[in-house]
Length: 246
Image 1 (cartoon, rainbow, N blue to C red):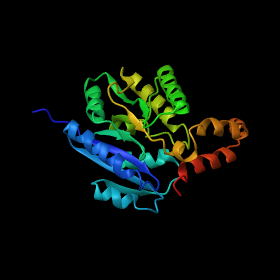
Image 2 (spheres, rainbow, N blue to C red; image 1 turned 180 degrees about the horizontal axis):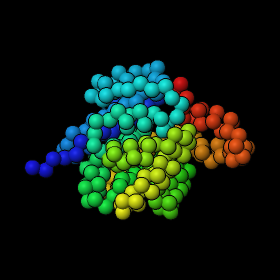
Image 3 (tube, rainbow, N blue to C red; image 1 turned 135 degrees about the horizontal axis):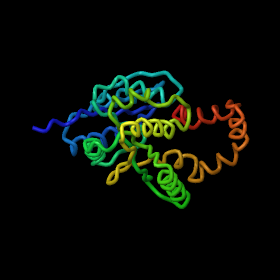
């Protein structure tokens, strides 16, 4: 009898009561397609709303975390996971039905150390199409697909988990996993048939030109950060990510 690998899906969450249920339900649907044992861990980061309660009602295991670093939040779930294979997804996003099954199939070939997933927005407009195009081009050029991360737990342990940076930790972590795989003659890859359904909530709230406007408005903060002064940039990151839901 073919024994399927056990999987843990790790979801970092900061006051995500509006989104946690749909994220978990997308994982349940992917679990049914996979047919193996899937554990869901929601890492509640400084949550003051009903995120934990909703997650537990839907069968997830809930951990508490107080860090202001998304990498540390993810790592709390990864190192507590019982699954042989780890997948990560942000709480406002969703995975498509075949995501878990495809990730396991790719790992089972023995060719791949792990990988990411293509990103598709849940709705589109001209500026969101441009953002989508930018993501596709950058992923294609670098090969560092992010969004949904998937690899064996032993791989995450070997590289020390996610690199503990407040921003761009995903690309840096992908680079480390790829380098680790290269030593074992394995490739870092991406899902082919499945993808991450990317939330547009920040665009819904702040406008579809959000990130272009932020880059222009905060150009000085980016320049200062390049020369070692990250104070203004860290405040911006807190506003956009670590404190976004209050």
